[in-house]
Image (tube, rainbow over all chains, first blue to last red; front, side, top):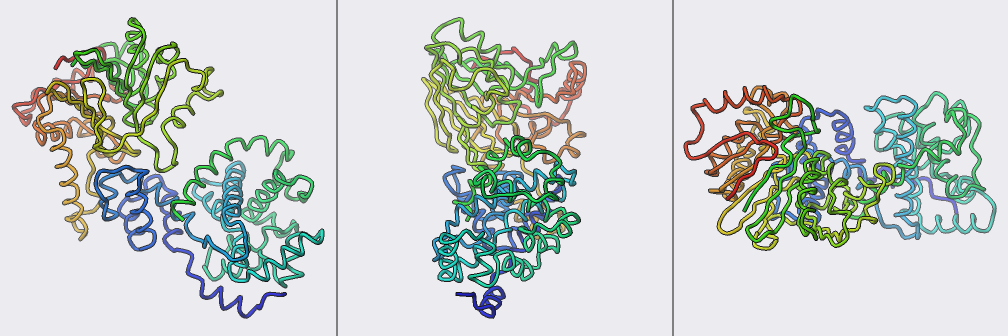
Length: 281
Length: 294
């Protein structure tokens, strides 16, 4: 049951924009001297973000004695640094739909995406990427499987057929998607990223995050890092199914076991990020 | 009640010949009620000495209030001897971390993990209880009532007011009075100013006529502009607070680690000759080991 391509195109075009505020907050807060009033302005220009920040500040987690009614009030009351960290978390995790009719475990997919994001950022840091740019690696990891979420959300029947095919055959997810849906989640993700006008390197990363071709990876560090992180995370869960291409092994620069062993902080980092899915989503 | 300063230094301990008079330990204050209830504020390195004092009379039973969990307010905790003595009871109070969504036990246990410290939190012999405070909800410890109020710092920081036998003591923890983030030309400036005044007014009402306040004064007015937003007060913000809340006795603490005894002496000479100090407030710089009886 292939996906109706024209319906897909229409649906992608009607998707809400990737919040501009999320991109702006990511860019603004990558500087230690980020301007408090600019941050407030970005939050206030996004009603959804404003509502989420206020909801969290007024939640039992903060235990405040008075209700906070505006972003400025929140900054006066709990401090700019706390609001800044709250906004970063809300902006980067509250973007995508949580429900779907295909039975895709959205939480598990999010958790996987967060792990890939955190790991891609760590790998980028280890490769000497300036700290001002590493946030793109996190976002790349976070969004690399956006296509899967979209299929499950808008084409639940087709998605279920594809899952049945995977269970009945030995085909990989990409092979099954190509065969059953006529399009892969990486291609759909790329369509979404174009629609959201994400930076070109993020579009490239989402489109090619399963690529094994050296020529697509070696000059695209973001794609390389997210691809490698995705493989390493899958390798931890299903070691027998994963083979890491030679060009990625070379880029990692150390035996896979050593890379995995160094990632002891990963779970902690992911837990921090995950804690926001339930309340900020 | 008797209040003793066990650590008055901000940021990091600074032992050595230049800090002998004012002291080099980071924040810790001990309070004893007339009935003998032991209350502690913060677990900077000063808490080590306080712990040695408390164990002279076993079993130790105390309440420990954490203003916030930045290093200089918790780094002495692994060396607080009562934790290791069976029969000790320590009730710890502090904030839940709403950003990482971690409770106080998790945050404090992390600093005693295998790679940081040889004894894990779960191996401590004392009976330890963790309690999350809620702003303005009073907590009773023996004859004292302690009420938390949220004060501006780059992490949630609670100031604590202690009321006991009609006397009041207040400790700010780390506190930078919030400032206007807008320029006077911005149309949001005046609305923000109103919010700031409300916030300041609420704090002033909360500690009105307090008998003793220990407040953050890490910077001088000259230093402050380059440290704006770092979360600390100055000598001038302490004067302002004393005026607004009509404080009887203001002790200025959290000395910058770069300050030597000689510099603090010089600062004090300049400060005490100022003509803008409120008449009814007694001011002094915090000195490690000094006690106050209310």
